[in-house]
Image (cartoon, rainbow, N blue to C red; front, side, top):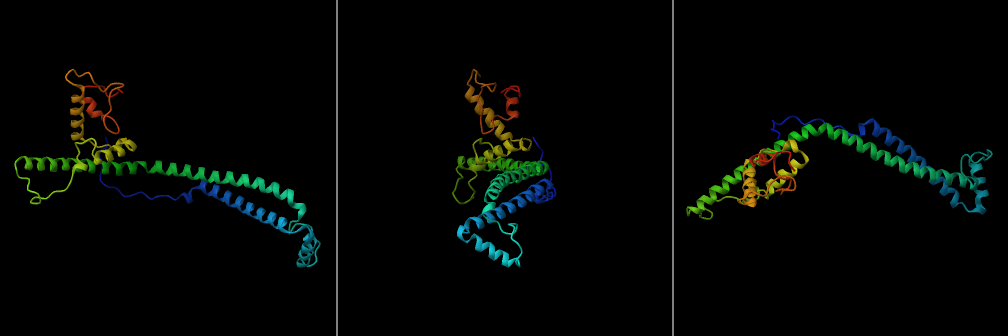
Length: 245
């Protein structure tokens, strides 16, 4: 279990846009997408010119070009349709692959960056989990003292007001607080704090469930209490091998 340390300065977060592989993939996509858009425009120009007016259209193009002989290089005509359609099909597939390449490059860069940030994030989670565990201990003290006042006939509502702390009791395996710590420990096992109140309650519940003969155990196939199972400290207290299960 990690021991929380003092807060450290947050690391600088690199941008995906600065990753060389991401830059290359995005540039490739930009070039291919530009070619695809240009090819679609040219194909649309050819397909929208009525056959009867193609010659008049080409004559106007030649006039605009200053009378130079039209060779099809500037504006596509019907003869270009097969080539344009072939190019369009190729560019559509290339565009799809380029987009997938960008996604892969961004995912790889993200995984690398997050792996580099994991030590700092783990430290953050350890501090958070430790603070929650301490909160659970205080909540148990508040609850225990309140119960004692009630048992002594001193439970005057409103005279010593308190807050509802049941959801944050550290000794209740099902409290929202312990569930939250379990979730942190699931993703950051090294950040799990010591929870002696929870350990004691789990040991008590397991011994009650086992009965006087102690048949029920925590070995392979045995019960698992809580969201992430019995903590190692509890298994040791019960006399089972940490490696069991």
